[in-house]
Length: 454
Image 1 (cartoon, rainbow, N blue to C red):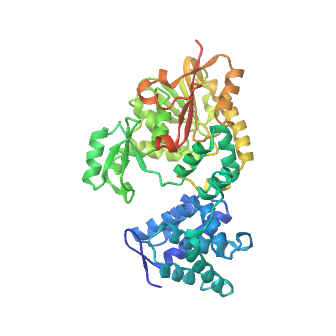
Image 2: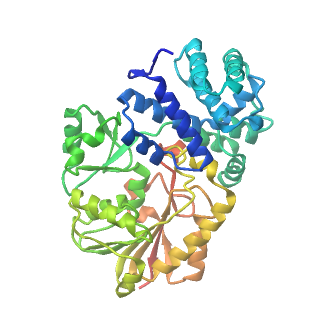
Image 3: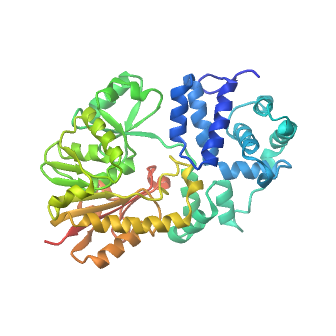
């Protein structure tokens, strides 16, 4: 088979074999896609165009999986439930190429033949199925959008049925849900945050443009830039200097909910690898005490390395057991709670196929425990900020309502009281923060600001 052309260059057949193996592994083992892809790139020699093809096809197939599978079944004689995973993923790769890539029919067929060459039992079936898909893909009739909108949205916009049903109830209408699911199927922009400990937004923009990266300011966050391309951006001088971090605009905004100031004592309760901790340090101008805490202490080790590169010197890493001396002493406790991640499906499309409603319920109990356990460190008159990257009542509004009902020494504060200019387009009727992919072109975040009575 001749190498296929991508937008940026030639893609060898070995790349498609790697894509097939990755898909098999990710789906069969319920893995996140990013780590297997990173591991592959470390151990295999791929060109830039081949790396781009791997990322696009893996994430593209995961984004559009329901739609692709529906077309496979309805444009051919294939029955999805009867196919082994390897055969199905060959068909998915070829169907994705036929739907979303500028690949000639003969190229798609040749790819199907090459990928199935070692599987003599099914190679003929795969070739005939791909030929049928190519003939009939534009004539497939999807579920009726008006009569069965949930089925249509789930199938055409590739979201599990239970999630579409859930959002239809919680968001108040099918048009809203369809717009959200449609936005989730788009490739998100590369958004970065300037490290104000090292530089400023204008200087960073100039530096990136000199390196060949066009960038424009984010619409809502005063600290963000949207960069036009991702290739080799981590090899730029600006990144090496610690001048920026990759951080979605929604993530930047919920960090700004803390209203962090120089000289304060702030606890970042679920710091993880530290993206928001580094931002908090910048907002504090490296003055005061910033305690980064997490149950996964290995992540805190990575945070310390990132802090060194960024020049964030006021960060102390600590497990919750070591926080006892800070009871009722923190000006702000920031809880970016572990959650179902329903607000970041456009970045992690693999997660929507793993998630269950049971997971959502179980996470809500964990979130309530975390909120209760860390609230004791807020001083009278201090701030407690609860945030998630999910779109789920159980994990958001209901967690906060239950906490406030049980802890009357805390009360809810509107984000407009933190910064009316930044947050005016993100406040719900109840006074919560919410960003949405289809409305703001950010990831989906929820936030609640609570004050402890003096």
